[in-house]
Length: 533
Image (cartoon, rainbow, N blue to C red; front, side):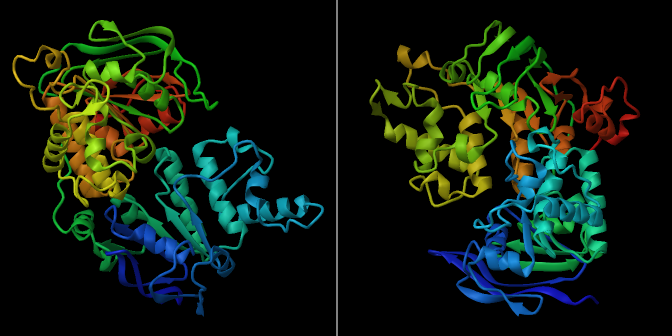
């Protein structure tokens, strides 16, 4: 048995009355991949933040290679050989690979940068761990997989011998994920130890040697990966069996709800390259159309166009036979519901209470307001309570700030706001009848389960299928290929702002979708049996 390189002993962390970590003890061995699993809010992020020095534990101690680790000191963690690769890359797009890797590694008082020595060291580390890299290439010119490679090299360049990977395949194509797994095998063979955090249980079973499962802040299970299954891991994570939604054909596909005909958009105001280039797409009632693609290839532009926050610069966009207005408020009135990509920054206003967020997109409705200034608080809170009960939103209550919700519960709140219409207004009120109270006609779900645990993923997907069966046209935009194949009646792939043909999900294979995500032209597919998740 390999020696321990990391020991967490009795780690406890409290935030007020909430016990985020409750006397957790874990070991990591040399040359081992330990998968750390748990629901949203189970305590994984808190535990890793304590290990990396961002938080200080209330109780417990940490040893790295047999020596105590100073608490609350990221520099001490780095010096001890602990490196972390976050799921959101922290790279400067306008700088070179070499500049990004070496940033912060040289003293400010040194008059000249030792670039030649740094470049040689970078290439040596890259060759040793099987991570080919171009030191002079700018980050902005790299693919998502290449950028992740740079993030890993940043940690290894600094001497990391313990590497924490947080959702490392969240934005990778299947081919890039395969390349990452091969790299992990090579790094472990070189003696590196890895903590692998992922919600994708198939990946966990494939790459890890052991699994540790947190639930409610406690360590509830540890096992050798070879001795467990996806079903057992899911049971440990949520405390009960989880049934993934079964993909079944749409009951009845109706008329076109939204039609895009050779639509183009400008780039975002922030100067990004996410834009549409002559995109054509038809979304029909009673059908889920799923869009696959690596993040940054036009998905944001498509979602913003359909939600009214970005204008088309060319082409024709129609909603139920009329021009698509570039106005979020008018689109809500016309039956468009949105589930935004970033639930924290766009989905909710974190400092406002849950009940205000629950009605925020329908606040102009006479159901919830009178005139421009008066909010019908009783009606609004009653509707928020309906969402809370119907969508199982758990937290500190309707008066608590939305930021206090876990990721899964925040997503349920957004889902309920989008899918549950207000109760019918009092009869005879003509002004109120002008505001629709029916279920949405078009649902734009952008990364609807991103970062959620397996239980929350199943719940959100079931609600989208139910909305489809109730007659809504549903657009799912996702980086997760498993989700695309699990939900889509038709599947299309977006790359470089262009959208390929939307074909029946049964006509695709995983390999063909992966190739299309990478920019290859895919004219035919092999047998469809691989497309079944």
